[in-house]
Image (cartoon, rainbow, N blue to C red; front, side, top):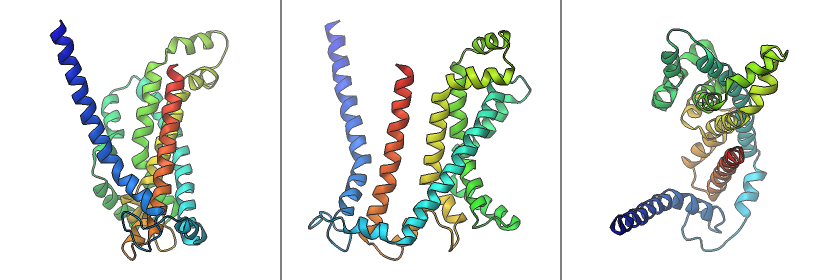
Length: 266
């Protein structure tokens, strides 16, 4: 038994070391970008010769960057609302429905997660050009909604499967209508799934670059597209500042999602 514990301890240390190295490998590029955004050099040089906030001042003073960030935020909010609403209805059908092809429909909803994004982007680009949605706000929303919806369905479906439907039935027996029971009983009980769906939907839209490149126009660009376009012309530290803000927003929302999930479990 002592030998078994020793082996388990060795495995635990080994797995911890591997996880630490993987985390370091993933985080180091982000830390480098954050450091470069505060560097005093006009070029992306590491280690920075000095420290400054000039690149953040230049970033917020340039209306092209602020407009791109606002465009990303607006698209993200609309995509989030639509993704949660459609994902909720789809999840109710997938969990509560009893109809032929239910599992096939579930797999169909999750297809954008396994399909290469560039293939999806080319297909949507070709369709949107024919129907006049290329380079439009509506086109952006639809394209981002396609890739955000699977994450919304997964989050809400998981919450619904954990919820005991007999509680909703009891509310109906007490005189509530089916939709009143869902609004007052079911939806509050699965609120953690709805919040997770909202956060992940916004992040998918906020960070998406491949679809956004195909959907963008000279007058409508998201923040990731602006970063990509600027990198092809100039390696200014302003790019690092914009990238740092993009990553910081993502990390904050991910932490919020983790806190909501932890609070629900406790």
